[in-house]
Length: 261
Image (cartoon, rainbow, N blue to C red):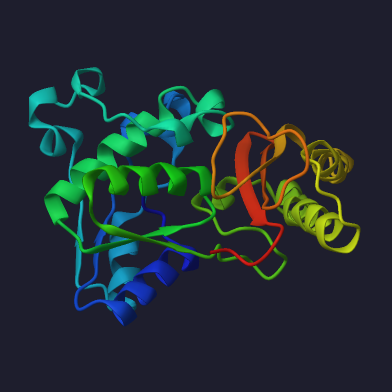
């Protein structure tokens, strides 16, 4: 959606390494915002984005308007027929941002129709979104989806376009998000903790101690998405966090049982 950073550029670099041609769309998609104020203040810098993409060898960058992508809508989001986001849209982000994943699935499907890619690259930072996109591609039978590791700042904060909106005091606290995830990973690997409720509690304590307003600290089986946190002992685990850092909402996640797939 623009305001590109090194995390986005890492996807382009990998696409250039593995494919004959790399195409990037830059479009702040109004369909996936349930908060008009969030849409209004989302950072935009198309010219700067284009320069960065040229620097890393992107072959084509394109954008458009809602009316161009969906001519039948006349630019009115309410007149766009949405795509079904599937079971992976349930819970967590799907519960807290009504309509978000339908908006994601709708624009991604239209972009697949326009570009007809053989391979599409997505970052793991938006973990639940990657599950929605994987399911969408599976239903269509194409393209092949490659989920790439989250790129982080030197202090562990996941790279995000929203980081530019953080006030200095919150930027200083923000690495606690990754520390919370690492705390859960240490509990899993070093102490053998396998119950979601215990892992959830360990993450929450770190975040509350750092002063964040915690929306959720949860765990899911990364290979079998469920709306609610699984009960009993897990054999695979992805820890997921959402917090408010002042007025900015941040999300992050980490695989606990092994490296990201």
